[in-house]
Image 1 (spheres, one colour):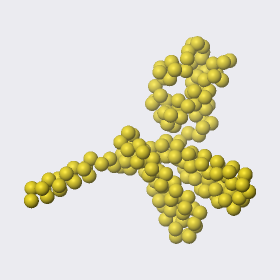
Image 2 (image 1 turned 90 degrees about the horizontal axis):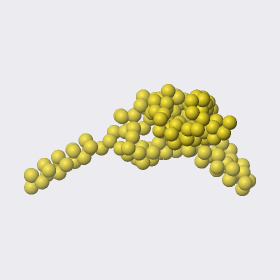
Image 3 (image 1 turned 135 degrees about the vertical axis):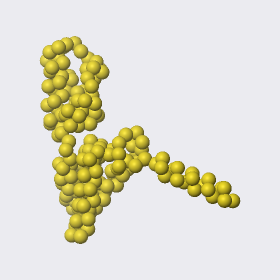
Image 4 (image 1 turned 120 degrees about the horizontal axis):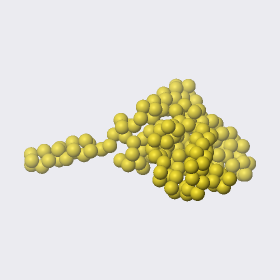
Length: 190
């Protein structure tokens, strides 16, 4: 009896040690952004600002879902948070369009308010904007074009160190690849 209780206790302790601690492995900017969200939630609750409170809760929920989805694949950072914010903003834009078609001005206003709150938190992140990434991608591709005008996009991505580029441009690797793909035809068709 005592042996089985001891085994159970040890198994439980090992399981808790094996669980990933995402937020403790995350970047400083990510941790600061999460603190900002929680502080904003607290202020909204004190001020009884229902729209802000609901929006921040939905942001926190989306971030938590992203953490669960990523599991042990990678650490959460400001770039993953940026992508979550972008996704939430895109959802709000689609909802606004649908509500406008159905002449639901009250819901359009609600979604627009939520979108502006999410955009405020998005601006706080130390991440490059889409315009900055596009400009950097065009510069990189133009330099590559001068060296070898027949090079394919696949070769460019293989030869480029995407990880270093993403750090230099202050964006995610996914954003670098997307920008290169988007601007490749523009530069190489000249």
